[in-house]
Length: 112
Image (cartoon, rainbow, N blue to C red):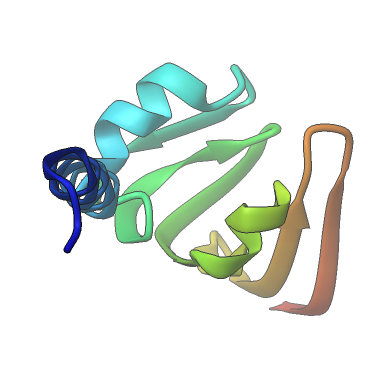
């Protein structure tokens, strides 16, 4: 029979998992995003959300969407997909980020 501490650990783990699953994207942006990332109208969670407009490294963007896959976090990577609209086109890419690098793959972009 599981001990009382096993149940406490299971409950604490579930609480932390639900808090991470529902963590607001606007708060995460303020706390963790580099200064080059400026977004307004941020909604959703860190796992799936949107931003109305902004700039990333001086590139104007709008209708930014993202979805992050949770399993790569186990090995210390953030992995997801980011489609967005540009002033005169679009950008859609998968990205993988670690503490030392950011890698883009499947990059599709179009402009006039």
